Amino acid sequence: MSGRGGRVTLIAVAVVLAWLVIGAVAGPYSGRLSEVATNDNAAFLPTDAEATRAQDLAGRFVDRQTIPALVVYERRPASPTPTGNG
Image (cartoon, rainbow, N blue to C red; front, top):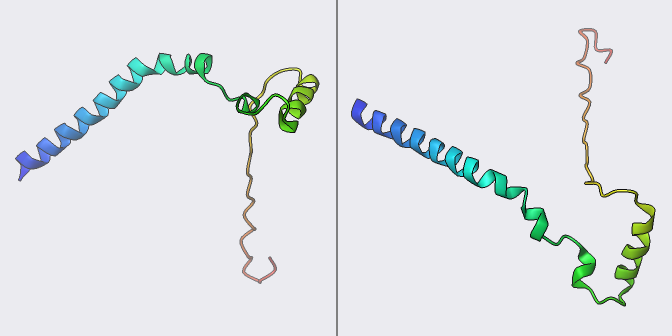
């Protein structure tokens, strides 16, 4: 029984190490992805489309490219007091 458990542990450690090695090798290349990726929706639309013209005009109002973020905050209600007055 202990032989099988040891083998399972060894396989699990080998899998984790393999993922770490893959991440270490592939990690630097993920930064280069932006060089070849096109996230511009206007690139897939005709140049005379309204969306393309609107995006070109909207670009004049932006000083720099940013990535939008969404922050969600949840406040839990206070726990009731022993007297029942929230």
